[in-house]
Length: 468
Image (tube, rainbow, N blue to C red; front, side):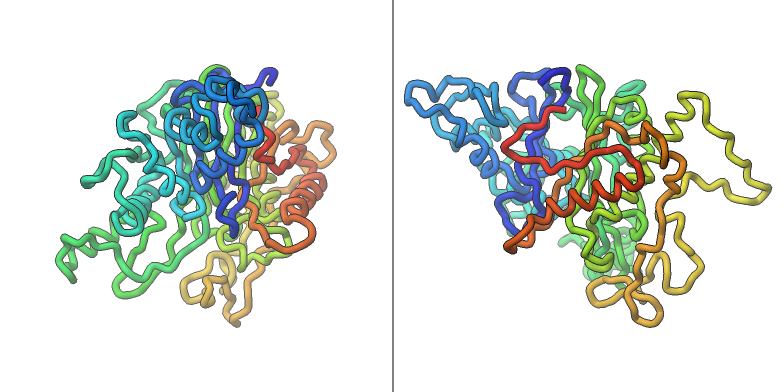
């Protein structure tokens, strides 16, 4: 393992359509030794099935060597086995070793394992925390653990008490921590976490979420719901539906022992075509950590190849957009490096009355005044939420460029040198031929090399544990 801070096991590297390998990631600090509560799960589309699959090839075969043995190989190397079979030991990991779940957003490919697996939690261990933004937990509570889709296994509203909801403060709770740890909360033994929201496409909102106790047609109830409903939840403006961003998350995970961090994204769209661009805040938070060598890895989706046009990305990334986003990050990392070296050029001060715009992102490059371009209104959307111009044609946002990479084009030390980018949530085609992830990595590396970003891209193999 060397001088590593994290072990990451990617149980589910895909975004479907196969249900047995959708998003589920286990993270622990290498300073812990598979102790109780020393692992967190980021998303839980795949949980028990993935753990069983990874354990089976490494369980000792002799009857006398199973229970009580220590795994000598595989992703769970070093784990003491209390049971004989892979499935019984996987249940032990789920019940005892995983300390809690951090959920990026409530789509089924990110929570289905959580629902299906939770009944095996033993009530005597106390409820297991599910941490997420309030809008994410509201969706899980109202639409999954609601005694209709699935039993209410939470400790709210008379549920079974196997799970407890921890509502995160977006951007971190400023009352917790000091200095570099301000805003971080305890995730599990050895790890703390902070959550920033990101956008994951848009949805039509045609009906308000009115509780059963509300009087039908009560205008005050409806107005209160409209003003208080979190982003991504159904809302009405008068009698007209509106477009709303689907809220997702990026988790900064920090190792207590070393202060190193990684970022794990949920599903995310590019700022350049987003109704509500939020990625730039993540890059601004990450840039100083990358510049000082404290953030060596990012886990982020890249669902499609560059053959997919913008209207059909449906809130996801492809190589052209991910490299554009990483170029925004590189620009901010370079700014930090220049400040650290005292070589940053003074920026021209704005003239009186001129706004002092921040560093450009792909969205800032849009010609906002051109009818039918830039942010699309409800009237300029097609039947599948695709952006249309005034002539009913698809808008191609490829024309909007990220920050100018010529600042570091010939540098022998690119801004993102040493950063590892692990690609998750690949949409499988289930066709014969080249695996989409292989092509995605090739397209990413080619575009990154052209921009001289310096980062490297990887497809995580569930059978190969990642030490970072």
